Amino acid sequence: MPNRKTQWGLIQHIINTWWPPLKGGDGAFEADISATEERLNLTLSPALREWYLPAGHRQDFIGNNDHLLALEDLKIYDDVLIFCFENQGVVAWGVRVEDLELDDPPVLVTDHDTEPPWHKSHDPFSEFMVYMVALATLISGQFSGSGSLGSKAANRLEQEYEQLYARTPSGYKLLGDSDTLIGLTNSEIAGNFDIQVATRTRAAMEHFLDIVGRHWTEISHHAQYWAHDFYDGCSDVPPRVIIQPPMTDPLVKPGVFPPCHLSSRGGKSSGYSWEQLAALNKASS
Image (cartoon, rainbow, N blue to C red; front, side, top):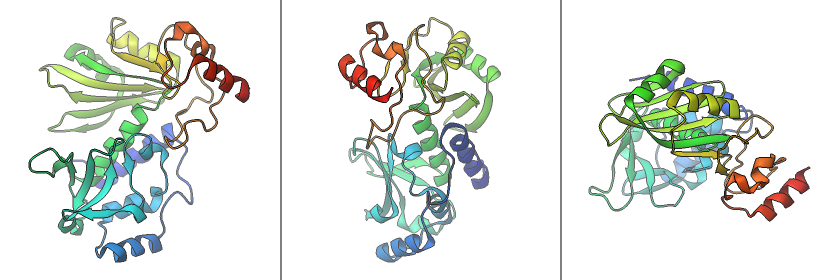
């Protein structure tokens, strides 16, 4: 099992590579943690403190899909400290209050329909945070895709890209380079893998498709909030970083849209009409 220092190091690497780096003011203060502990009559484990102190106020790389709660919103339910909700508010993650005495406690999950209602999601908490930051990044690249691959194609990816993370027995792996991040998970279909990919540039997505085969017909999107199907005419959106703003305000600084977003060949926009896109494009020019 990777140690906590290694997992925090990987999270820092993903943030530095794909997101604006952490800076002063992004994290909570000791006084904030003390107030939360007093309010809830508990002591946060070292691992939770190690997240909230440097990054507790950031909502981009952990709040654009599932939402990590701010300290003031932490709550106890069924003797579980709930710290994260899924984007539709159906699924919740938490740590048993009695496990907070552990340095890096296991994380439980519930969707209120399972028996027992709480069951293990990840162990430990720092591994859960690797998964969540990676997931937020994988759905936020300029170019992204998800689907399934056979073992031969998955092996080609492992030969081409650096392995950033590997976890057994789940089989979850992160691969990547400076412009590409790939998540691989064992599929329910024997010999197959579920895959998510994010790239910063069209060239990086083209390279990925060259490796897995141009016949790959799963979802390939260009951008997130103004997404359309990826095709040969797609061009990069400056700057070459994450372009999806937080879900709370999807129109923050949208930037100039490339022509493929305003062309009917690009496919149907998810969220905006072509007229809205054109107006946004004009306003940001």
